[in-house]
Image (cartoon, rainbow, N blue to C red; front, side, top):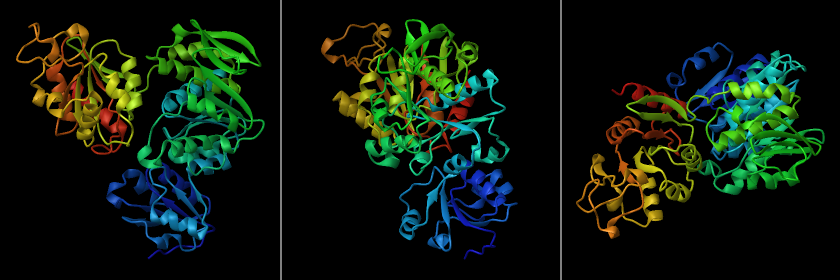
Length: 502
């Protein structure tokens, strides 16, 4: 039974993670009667929930009963709550509007807002654009948050018209949003979260919603090298800007590379403002992130003259191709935020040494074919762990057209490296490294080791397989929710395990 005090509109908040807790607190402070619900019990919600209990709220924990909707004026949905649960279906049938913390923030924000979305690179682009905005000195305050850091709604009452807010937006947030930021960036759209959205088209439509509420004076920034993002040009209602690795005559405004120079084009006029060597981040994908950040920063009013120093001083964020340690000439790299096969491929493209790849977690129902082909180059062994390990083994076997019996290296035994210079694991009948073998027995795929346990056992296996010059890369291609609360927790555990190696 729900007992509510009448304080104004009645709002239901579903999901009490970071976004939901900030939202419930904000609503309670602004004369809403709040019903907060989460499927977890109180003792699993953490210290932030204890602080939230100081507000005059009604809590329903362990379930989402339909009685939550009785007399409700609006339902706010946290990003982690699926949109097809029965309670939300019932809310739609009753005509109760749905919203979330990002939508409410855009409605209340008194300043210019930059929104950044994409399948990869959102966090790096958002943080770098924020640093550029701070460096220019034009804004009274620069606020950075959204899907990363603190929900911006918690600070909206302190913002002024002289500020700028730069927010990361996920497809989960965008799929019910109706308001758009002043500058809306779509970096790229590649398969992701199909376990949530069902189809690639539904996922793309969720991303594209960032453009729907823009007006004629607003700016949309599209990743010009990404075909799906570029195709959204026809949906742009204001000015269309872009960024890419090369010039395009169709692109009148934006940033691109010309050899080793970074170019800003405005109204068809191109001016260099930085050098490629200024970029400290590893990989082509991060070059694109820098171009994206520079483009959205200029679009919101940042002078390009401040950007070279910011770009030179910007290093990789934790959990994104983070070098944890080099020991015995082996580098251990934490890329836990690579939660799709595509992001794992991007990580592999950034490395030139032989790789032992740690792959696994919880699957998002994404295609694995391209990664199965990509690991034939430069990957000498793959260690599969977590809930998705058996599925990944099966998918790789299908693409490689070999049986699991020929793929496994049980407990680190079996196939040996016949030619380390090739970086390709070869199965040799009864022979060892350096011994001649029948050419017909050589297979062109990495060794696969599937551990029944989780990340800790995967790290132990990697430590047993490494040779000097190798890179051990945690780039799992899956979410962490089978073993950890989030990807950051998985990265922290990887870091602890690696630092504990002798």
